[in-house]
Image (cartoon, rainbow, N blue to C red; front, top):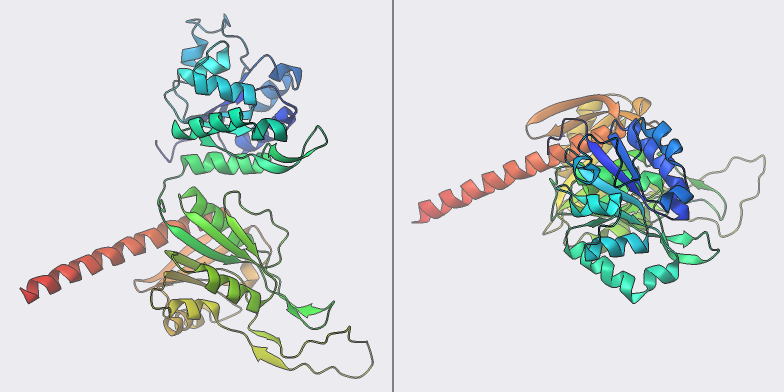
Length: 412
């Protein structure tokens, strides 16, 4: 698949109340420059009209296996031939069963049977339907047949019940689709990432924190997932939605984050320390709320543990990537920090350029020199950082292999 050309997607919509979410999904797909062809089942048309999805997609919506608008009268063949993927959202229990057993009694099911591209399904159904043994057998068969499942999620359902079977939100389905298109540069790798701020309690209601939004760390987690990695995300307090597919460990303080990292670092191939961890914490937090007065308040602070340094010193340390935010002397401070902490890569930026925003301006420091990345959306920077990490890891592996061969040759 050409990673540079615009992607073309066939979006199949089946019958279910979650079909209302498809309008937002179509909008997001178009916004992401994905060319879209929508196909609907008869049941889907009971929940949302073809007119709506035609207006949003900018293309004719097909519903009939015998649609005469196709020149060859072979819509079930022609519609999917130049597609990069077929996505079914929502995918009802009935439609999933059709795909498993090879039924082809309408346009969409026939397209799925006659396809030459990947198939992704976003299940949506009542919790009992999802838990039914027949549905679970069908799910297992779909996975065995190479179909990618996007969800479902647990939560409130239209029937008033709560449980598994809720269709993913449009943003999460889009992320799953983009992951399907992405090169799997980190396939088989386990990645541990920290993100967000920490909060150091002063008393039960107050504390010291920073302005980190967590956006850069969450973007890197999403990029690593898209690249095929298994991701564990240790996150300080954040209002961001966790990247679908990541194992998220929420923490509050720097001490919490250190404990979570050390408890989960074993077996990880890469550690990316993006979190803005407090350098100091309150030495003796008050157990009760400190009352306001006109007298000055003196706080005694104690240094926190340098998490990335501790990880880098482990006997079987993962490939470590640090982050640094500076207000001045960026190059001098960043490179000194990288060497002091013995990190293969350190990503640095000026605090004035990044905090809270959707863009950032990173500079990467490694043994090969300095690599300015320019000002770009954080999602783009995250993907470029993943590529840089993979390239450097590959070069290091090649160097180790050559050294081992030379050592073996010298001994002989």
